[in-house]
Image (cartoon, rainbow, N blue to C red):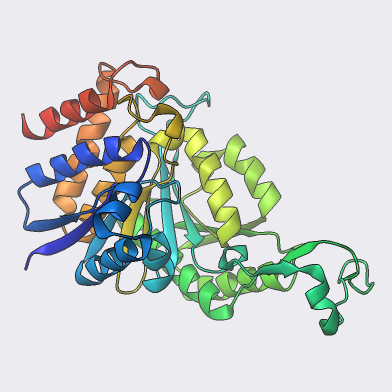
Length: 357
């Protein structure tokens, strides 16, 4: 049966990377059907209102097998539904150095790991409010052992870590490590959180991951406090294989991970649930370079490779990754952020030439 993919081009410079990526996917001549949407403001105009545009997006997503999502400045909707509506709880962000990537590190050759970020909980649930609304709870600080001063003018945010959410992201991480081991990987899972200070919330996350590790005796396991992990991520990133962490740390440290291989222009991601997944580059919409045809399309192309693998076209996914690696290794058509002068179009033409001649 045909696979249906929704394409949301994103905003600012993002559509400039998305359009040639979709063309490359079409050139594979797979049984793949695309539903392509306009960018944010154009979508609002086309569907008559923001609500109408977002309703059309949700309906198309519900009819699809997956979504390829372009970076957004908030104008394009759909991201909330893709994440919480589809319960895509595992944000997978690979960091794999390839020859030609402009890493700031002296010896990046062995960097090949994946950040697995819990995608639905933590501070990203967006539960915030006035500090004085907490007064009836009579909260006491575990650090100072003093009552929380709710008379001060200020705000709060709730960090929520659940046993269920922690367990499913832990199992996802261990299953991914097992898959990578079968493909020649190290078979190692690293857990990180601030469990020395946030002993209940981050402590729960660590405890659940520890317990899950016992179900996978064929895999290695280690854990670090998040600040120690951050240091190790810069000093020795090649020591890692699969790293699992709560939402906020994952969002921040996956950007650091991208920095170790050469920047956000090289960083793809996939957000996986039990019944759905969507794929997007880690970088933002790059409004400062919109319209200049110089955005690095590598992250979008690699996200498309993750999409192909998810839909069952593993050989095509590997071919796409291999073509990207070949273009970088040649050094002839590098994007500006990687030390070259190639346009977005020229880079994608080079990849397409390797793939299809």
